[in-house]
Image (cartoon, rainbow, N blue to C red):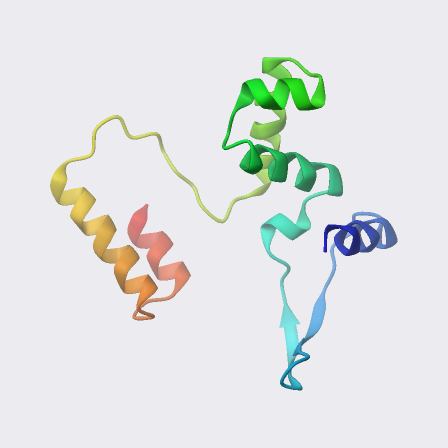
Length: 127
């Protein structure tokens, strides 16, 4: 699958792509319209690989340093750059969250999981 994304990114030269059809081959169902690629799919192939390795190493910067042969600050800078492209979620570091806020956040996530609210509504509620 990653090779297909790399080929697509190479073919488009990194320019924005507009998807106009989504098809489920097993069912023959297709939907036509304008669809935006997910934020992760819009990253360069190199950034996608970097993010994938970060996830595979469970966020271990030490392993990232060894795998890519780069320094700690370089790993952090790459992650910050990639994170800047992923504006689908904006978070602030929370030192201590009051129990009431935690319950409200869990309620929002439960409602999202049950399909009661949209992703946009959940993100607004979590801000």
